[in-house]
Length: 283
Image (cartoon, rainbow, N blue to C red; front, side, top):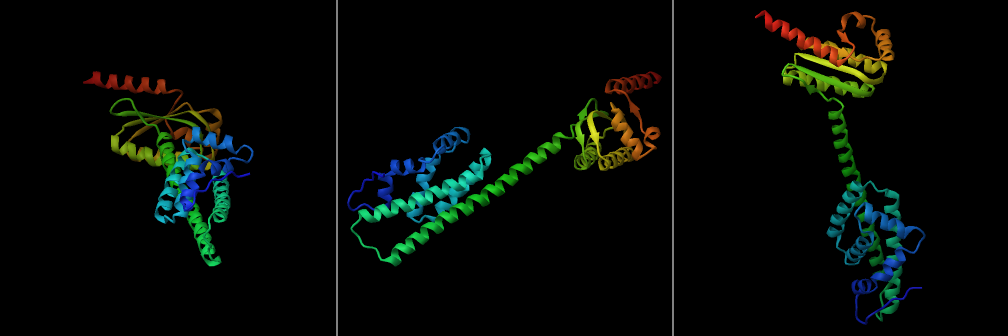
C-alpha cells in the first residue's frame, strides 16, 4: 500500500521528489532485488536507486538531450563493470511500470482535469523517452564493450609474442600454451617485424611450453622458420615435445634435417656465446 504525500499546487516533478522513498521502495519490493541492487552498488560502483530517480525526473521534464547523455554514461559504466544486460532491462521495465503508477496517483491527487488527448500525448512521450534511453544505453554499451574486447585482444596478441633480447644480436621467443592457426599467424607477423626492427641475428624459439599444434599452425610455423632465414637471421628451436615433433615431421619430413634444434635454451645460449668467444680469440 502506497503512502504518498501531495502538496497542493505541486507539479509532477515535485510530487516525485517528495515521494522518492516510496518510489524506491516499490522498485525494491520483489524478492532478491534489494540484494542485487546492493551488489551492483558495491561491485560495479553504480547506484541504481540514485540513477533511477535522476532518470524519471529527466523523463517527466522531457529533457531528451540529458537522457541521451545519461544513457551513454550508464552504458559505459555497465560495460566496465561486466554486469548482465538482462537485469538492466528488467530494472528499466520496473522503473517504467512504477512511473506509470505514480503518474496515475498524481492525477488522482490533482484537481486539474486533463483531456484524454493531453494525458495520452504525455504518456506517449514518456514511453518514447524511456525507449530512447534504452536504445542509447545498449548502443553505447555494445560499442564500448567491443572496444574493450579489441584492446584486450591486442594486449593478448602482444603478450603472446614475448621476444626477449639477450644481447644486441640474440633474442629468445618463449612460447607457451596451445598454438592454433590464429596465434601462429600473429607470431609470424610480429616476429618478422621485430627481427627487422631490432636487427636480430639469432632467434632462439623455445617450444617447451607448447602442448599442441594443429596442422594449420604447423604450416605457419614452418613459414615463419623460412621467413626468419630469408631475413638473414639464424633461428634455433629448443625444447620441442615428442608429440609436437611427430606432428611436424608427419607434416613435413624435411623438418628433421633442415632445422637447427637444441634440447634447451641454456644449451643454445652456451653454444652461441662459446662460438662468439672462439671467434673473438681469432683476432
